[in-house]
Every structure is written in C-alpha cells, then in structure tokens.
Image (cartoon, rainbow, N blue to C red; front, side, top):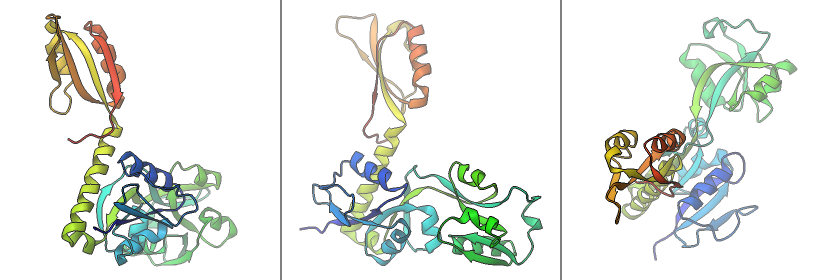
Length: 291
C-alpha cells in the first residue's frame, strides 16, 4: 500500500481556515474536524494532515517531517528553509513593512543612521534587509505586540506584517518601506519531490489545487443568442480560447453560447447580452478549471 502524503497545515491563525477550505474544495475531505487535533486523514486515506504552528511548517517540510505544507512566504524566508515553493495560493496576502512613529520626520531609508533600534518578530529578514543597505542596526527581537515598542522606548522603528494597516494606525505608526510581499504558499520537501512516486503525487496535488484556484474567480456563462448577433457576442465572450456555439433544436434563428468568463465581468456581460436580445442567460460557479 502506498504511504499517505504527509501535509503540514497551520493549526490556527489567519491561514488555517483558508488552507482547510482549499483542501476541501480540491476534493480531499478530512475524516474528522481539525479543531484541537494534531493530525487527521483525508477520507480516502491519500493524505495525512499534520496541524502545527505556521512558523514551524517550513522547517518541518525541509527536514522531511512532512512532504509538503502550507505556510506564509514570510515564514519560509524567515526560516531560510531549503524547500521548493510550488504554488502561491492567493490568500493570506500581506506585506512585511518597516514602520516609523507618525511623529518621525521621515524622508527615506537613506537618513536611517547606524545603531537604530528595530523591533521585529522577523529578525533574519530584517537584518538581511538592512545589511543589504549598509545599515548596522540594534535588533530588538519580540514575539508579539511589535507596534507598542516605540511607545515603550525600546525601539525606534518596527518591522511587522501589515494587512489593512489599521493596527499600525491605531498605534500611531506609519508604514514607509515594503520589505517583503507575502501570501500563503505551498512548499514541498526536495527529497519528496525527487522520489518518483511521491513527487508524482505532489505534482498531481498541485495540479488539483491550481484548478480550484483558477475556478475561484471565473464563472460559466450560458445564453441563447440570435444567430445574426453571434459575431457581436463572440467579441464580448472570448472565453478561454473562444466561446462554444451550439445549434438549438427547432430554433434555427437562435444559438446557444457557452463561455468561461471572469467573475468581475459578469454584470457588464449580462447587460451586453440583454442588449442583443439574448435569452435564458445562466451564470454558474465553477468547481475546477483546467486551462
């Protein structure tokens, strides 16, 4: 019997639920709820899921504890993990940013002097970023509440993750430099990828996830269109390559048009179809989309 793929997922935090949802949408259903569980299996037994801290996943994958995992790109970079980044997952987007107190007269990184105190929970990335700019810093490692450190007098600047910026603003900090753009990523162990069987299954898993992600922002649109307006409609509905056009039984003057369209374009497309006297317009979600 082929061993299950070992997949490490966040046990909590902002990446946990989206990672579980993606697994479910890809057709890999867990046999138990993951809440308070350290591990679970998909119902078909193909995947064993390990629930661990987001910050540990990159190292677990590098060391082979798991064949692959989902974590933030920021965590991969901070751990300096030697893993294969196989797929960006489109959720958990944020930026690791340098921020200064709002009272600071900021005119650019060129004015930052050696010895500045920088508080962060990302010491590796932060030190490397300043080193690349020739600035020696006094690093202040923290595990949380980074934003409060300037107000306590223990740091001059902070480096922290920013999603909406509201936390920074609430603490009178102004983000001024982007150090890293991050999102959730699917990473794999290099030895697992090199193994013929495991590597093939990992590639298939990525292919399935890609098909789900491609489908998220697309819709399947169908409409009955006057045959004489088909050229106009063809320009409106390019689809993946071109729309599918089918004859209708007993209605020679109409044809059925099917196309995959971006979700954001649906409203305008429906309005345009109505303007050319289209009928029976139907828009449906897509579970998976393989370009």
